Length: 83
Image 1 (cartoon, one colour):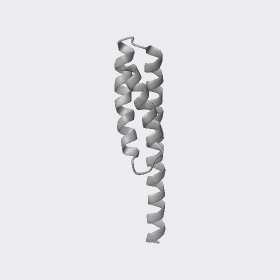
Image 2 (cartoon, helix red, strand yellow):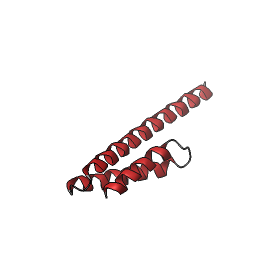
Image 3 (cartoon, helix red, strand yellow):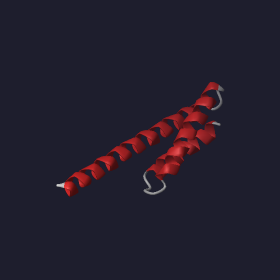
Image 4 (cartoon, helix red, strand yellow):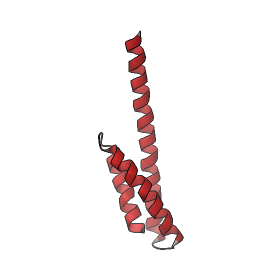
């Protein structure tokens, strides 16, 4: 489970930067968080589990920031078109 969490964390970070398929990245990051947390409880390859958890959380944070930036850009364009 620790290896799967690490791989999903890496996939989450990579796919978060690719427009159009970044939803796959966020799904991978959420599953990576779950698998890494389970692996940490089982004491199975704890270093990999922590790395997977950190990478998945970073992917989630990057995705939230990207969504906020895109939302602000759309709001700015909409207000400039209205006036």
